[in-house]
Structure formats: C-alpha cells, structure tokens
Image (cartoon, rainbow, N blue to C red; front, side):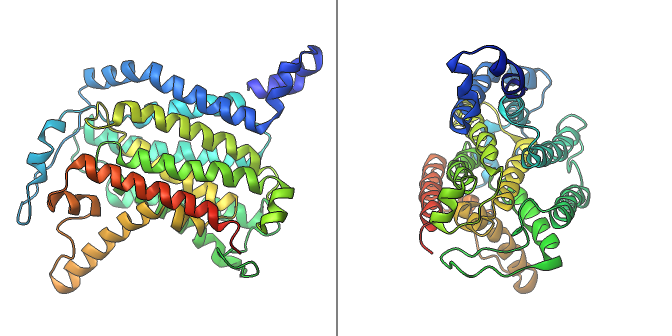
Length: 370
C-alpha cells in the first residue's frame, strides 16, 4: 500500500531523494524486518494478556512414562500458558508486507494467499481445541484436506500459469545441468512440498522457542536466495534459474525474520506464549511456497534439515511400531526423544538452533557449488 502510493504518486510529485529508497528491494526488506519486529514487541504484551483473559491456555497431555521421565510432569509448569500466539506472528508479518510489497507481483499475492490460508486452517484447529474444548480440534482428515486443497490449487496454478519457463523443472544442488522436467508430476510435487513443510514445522513446535528459532534461521537463508534469483546478473553467475519478480519475496521473508525474532522475545524459555497451529502451519507454508517460487525446492531439504529430521522421526516411529511393535525412539518427534534421554530443554533448543544455523549457511554455500 505504502509502496504503491509512493511509487505511483508521491515519488512523482515530491522530488525528495528519500522517496527513491522505497524503490530498492534491499531498503524495503530491511524496513519490513524492522517494522515486523517492532509490531511484535509492541503488540506482544496485549495479545498475550488477551489470550490469557480468554483462557486460551496450553493443555499438557499425560503420556505413559514407560521409558524415561514423564513429559507431562516435566512440562507441568507450561500448562495454561497462552497459545494461538501465531496470531501475533501473522499480524507482525502481514502489516509490513501490505505496506511495502508490490501487489502487482503475483509471486507476492500467491505467498500471501498461502500464508493466510494455512494460518486459517491452524486457527480453526486451535479455536476448536482451546475455545470449544474439542480435544482433537480439527480432525486429522479435515486438517489434511485443508492443506491438500491449497497444495493442489497452487500446483495447478503454477503448472498452467508458470512464473518462469523453467517452472516445471527440478533443479538439483551441486549439479549444474541436472534439471529434469517433472511434467504433470509437478502438481503432486507442489502438494508434497507445501503439505510436508507445513506439517514438519508443526511437529517441530514442541519446546520453547524451538520452531520459531529454526524457522528464522531458515528464513535468513531464503532472504539471500530470493534476492539472488531475482537478479539476472547474480543468477547467471551462480548458474541458478533467474525468476523475474522474485526479488519482492525478499521483503516477505525479511518480514518473517523480524516477526520471528519479535515472537521469540516472548516465546523463549520459559515461554510466555506458544504459537499453536495458527503459527506453525503458516510458517511452514511460507517456507515451502517460497522454495517453490524461487526454484530452490531441494535446497529446502538442507536449509530446513531440522524440520525434515523431526518429520521423519515421527514417520519412522509410527512405521516401526506398526510393523514391528517396537519403537525406535524413546518418543517422537525427536526433540522429545532427547528430553526423555535426560537432556535439559534449554540445551536441546540451543543445539537445534546451532544445527539449523549451520544448515542454513550450507544451503547458501550450495548455490555456488555446481
């Protein structure tokens, strides 16, 4: 909105050098991050207090402590902590995006739609669980349907109205000339990326600050990637696909970084608020759709490696128990395995952040190694 006004009107009427700054992606990205962080800090206390007044508190379910300590006892002090804090994240993210992004760019519009849709699915799940006291919230079937419908819609749109001639190609890290054409398989591939990423972040959200910290690390990597693929000179130099208009996504990801850091202010151990599915599904969806739009889908496996491991730990655990009647981990997702093994929560969080930061840097390094 602000970008539109300045670009279309004020920049032509008022000959003041400062207005020209808004035409630079780097300036708008940095401004978006700052505004998102500031909004989160300013609104955080009132949002948390409102959630507390509405008695929207976390319920810690009891699990049979057959192996290791009982997590319901370890986390009992978290019971009643306000959740649905994803509302704060989405407000902090979307306000600077609306102000500073170019909404004539369909990559921006598509990313915002994915964010709002998955935030809505997560909100419905949290609302039913916490305000309507339906223990399961949205059933797994309805939640998955909401994600699949979105993934299918995005896949069909990108297949028939690609944002780049190379849309249906799959680029492999480390291999300059390896990019097979997926054809119609591109649609289910898009569904897999969006649904898989949103659920993986959701599974990671189990300890204070764990998910939002890892998301912020991954997002920092995509800030750089989005900017690079939106510049034809850098894209040609690095032998990565050039995506016209992808630079605008830098602003959205930067706003995510600012909103994430602001939320971490309140979500760090001991947490004053949890994001709930409202935040985790939306954040995962943003990472997934950005990776798709900048043609760095496989780099997401590295950059978001923590989320991949968390998701696969659940898959392995469930599969092993159904086929063998035995568990591989003390508990899944894997961060709970380390808790049951006796690791302190703060140590698990710090080490997962360290791994996430290393993987984010590795993902950036892969751009040059081809």
